[in-house]
Image (cartoon, rainbow, N blue to C red):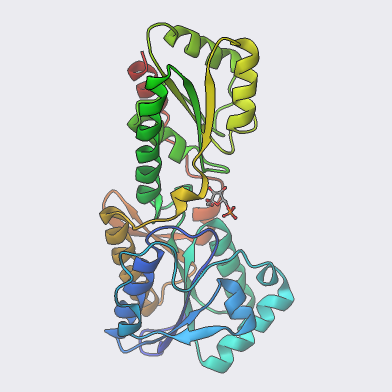
Length: 328
Ligand code: F6P
């Protein structure tokens, strides 16, 4: 652990799938560090930047005019080199040569797993910021980027509803979420969808058919929200199965895809990223590390990396009931 007086130089990187608000987090870390007289070096392209020594120094003016921008000015990647012991050893040498004493890593499960093993092997303290549109991390009510992603997806669904009702069509709308149905479930409720399919719940296609049949005649259009990781194999596959049972239905499929990952972050994501970015610097200054800073019930909270990444954050199961009632 590094004591407050010893810390003088931080490394910062964004890793994994990008999410709106990563730039706001970068800005907060850089300026939060600056007020304590700390130098910040940003590594480019996630952990690859550490392994290959691609970096730039970041001062408070280098992060001007980015809070409103999606993506990440440091770029991001899922580094295969850093998954090897050799790659991590190269990264440790890069940090030593630069005099970087601690890291702030912004990302999701894979990012924190990498930082944890790096701290264990090479003693480099790291604090994480939860940034993933999936909202699948334990230790925070919301991850940075989630709010923007669900608002983007719901806006798309509202547009789909317009055309769906004009043509009396059944739409299957696929949203992201490889292992988590959080996006799908919140969007289904917010867009007034008729049904939702998520990875957390094994579905019987018969139940879905019954729900669609129940709505048939009474409704001019229906939207079924499908998380990409749901158990049947995605929106196209589900649509194909439903068409076999309901050949008379006029069915269309829309995959929203990476549209959800881009765009200007919402106020909620900007504020969350700003608070947590400063909290990460404060944590390192206190000598805390090997943990992710999150927000639980409005309070900044540190959760050990190992606890944040074990399994996936559970979806709110009451929302299935809410959706069922509202879809009648
Ligand atoms: O983890 C975020 C996420 O957007 C997932 O929802 C999705 O499955 C995945 O990343 C897509 O990754 P890529 O951008 O590499 O296609």
